[in-house]
Length: 270
Image (tube, rainbow, N blue to C red; front, top):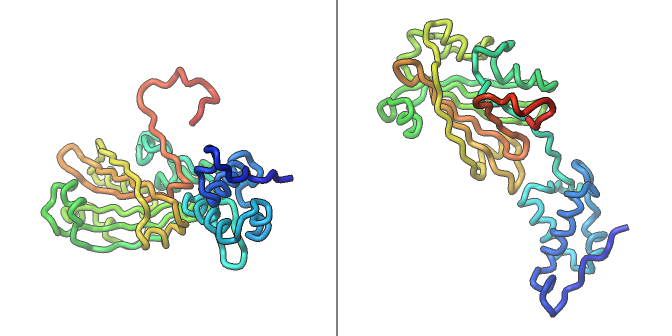
């Protein structure tokens, strides 16, 4: 049985909160404590209006706030549903590390090892380097690059997009980079087999709200940010690639393993 939300008072406290925020806060607490688990449908606007003694416009504003915060999704004719968050954990320090055993590329290996199903689509283009990419590749602005772009899924849910730019000088030494389709063993291993070993990388991580194109590809709702992971890879002599991975902020967690971690013990959080 739901309890009525606190009535608006004139002695401070709840009176400072607009009624729609009181509605949102009460529902947020119930989502947090499991009253409404992921995937559950929330009561209708009319039911919530009666419960909170508020107009349907007020209730709709409170639900809209939860939508903007990525806690709730809405569908025409289907009402409001608690967002599902099946988080995939990516170990960024092992990603593309050839010292770790893997079957195929690192993405497919990590997803498969997590008991999930990987799927990805590809396109390959010859494009001028964007300014940020040219700077990291130490190339002239607008110089020619090979873009390998993948749209990646975990099970059937969009997980990330990955845009990797390779400088044009690599094509003569590693021609498969410019061919359409997947490189089964992974591009890092393919380059290493061609004598172009990645010996180091530099990561830059940031967050922002998605562009319309990113929101479409990743199927993110209002209020859900994206995680941007830019990795520049280096051979012993010069940069060999710049990879920009855009991940759904609500479905991904990234970690790194650095140094001796024997003190973590068994069962430590990953």
